[in-house]
Length: 100
Image 1 (cartoon, one colour):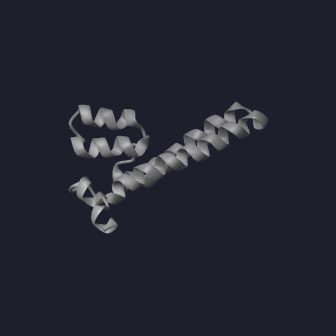
Image 2 (cartoon, rainbow, N blue to C red):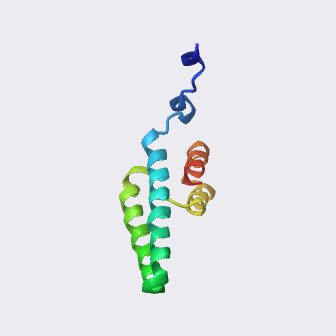
């Protein structure tokens, strides 16, 4: 009986490939992890370490996810794409959910 009530995520995604949403989620998660590590490390090595670490990790993660999901990794970027008509409503909502 429980199997019948399970939610099929693919049906909610519609024509959006699941790996696009997963790429956005993983990119944001890795950026939070690496960026936080750089920030903690900055207390002993200086502010330049935090700035370079965050900048380089964001650049690498955008490059890594750009071919899969567009490499937004930021709700502001997804919103800008939505406002300019480059991103559909359904994909926008899923990207925002994955980025938070």
